[in-house]
Amino acid sequence: MMLQQYRLDNTILKATDALKLLQSERAIIETDGNTLAVPILLDNQRKGYMFHGHAKLLLDTIVETKEGAMGNSVEKEINEPFLMLGDTEEIQQHLSAADKENLTAMGYKDEQEFIAKAEDLLQKLSRRGKIWHHHCCDDNYGTMFAFSNEAGKLDILVADDSRLTYKAMDRVFIANKRKVVLKTPNEMVLSSNCKSLIIRKRHF
Amino acid sequence: MSDEMKEEIKKLREELASLKEQLMDVTEQKKSRGIYIDIGNNVRHYVEDVMESINEGIHGELERCILIGPRGMKIIRKGEPNREEEHVVEANFSKVSEVMSALGQEHRLKILGELIRGGKYINELQEKLTEITSSTLSSHLKVLEEAGLVVQEKVRGRYLITMPGRVAYKMALRITGFVERGSQE
Image (cartoon, rainbow over all chains, first blue to last red; front, side, top):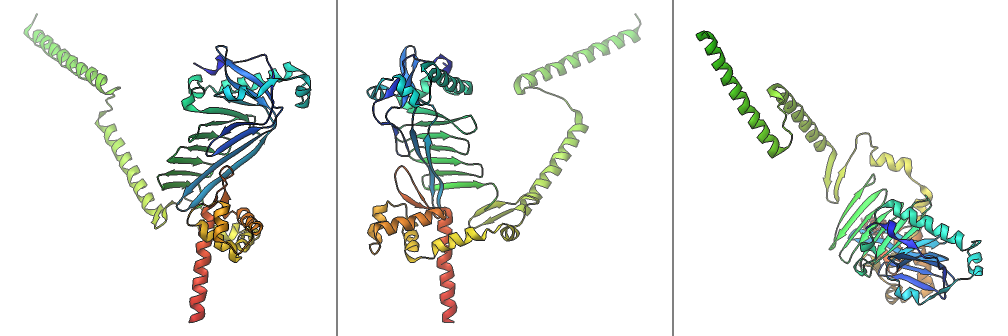
């Protein structure tokens, strides 16, 4: 079943307080209070949210090898709308109806403008055609986030307590408890059980 | 019908039977191995020759280009500048000086010495470097981070020595070792 079956709700909500959307071993995503949110529905059930507010992403895309650590951390302010698919129950408790003031504070004339922007992001994700609802909304697969990047494409993060997959413009990072893979434009590092393989483009 | 013609028809029948058998063989091979194309012996020999020469070429290139040293393997591409030339052309002395000055402080070297044994949180480092205050420790870590010798995990907060940090630390110890031995001689 493809992402096209997801649709946006008409209700615009706002966060009543700061929300920690994700906290795992390697990643944290949090938003400020008053962040706007619109629920994403699948068969009339909330499967996620489209957020727009002042959010922060912290992500350790670092691989430890015997030769030293490789990679770095991602620390990003997210001021553009972003999407989250996953467990919504806890977040739901921290959301209430948004008013016009909240929309104006985020630079929207009215609800329709926000919905249109959110729909645009959902469309962009569905065009990727890579996300299946049973993967990203099943608890076993953790939570999925999609952020717009500078190139107008999407950075994707899928994470749960111990596993993480991050695909951005400049890197791909995959980690679980025992194995880590980092691919950047110049190098690729694979680390598993204290053994590591490093492939570099030019420098040795 | 003359005997000659009968003989001719018999031969033609035999040929037809033989062709049918060949056709059956080809069909069987098609079923079992996908597409079967009989390219004839000449073409086959030609392709074998070409493949053999390609093999020899690859073998020769590999022998020339792959150097296996104690730190691993390097594949040198044709036309790639050698490392010494590269360093002369691309040396960024301001960066070199930044890295060297990051190394040129006793406590920073001690921090690298601790991190080379494994990643540590700031309180663990503080326990090892009791002679400096926590703010001094933080500023040393910032210098090391800016020079690319140390990296901090933003989520967990642990500090890790980077690959260049490890090389720089070992290099500093080796140079010091050489200098000390030189002054004794």
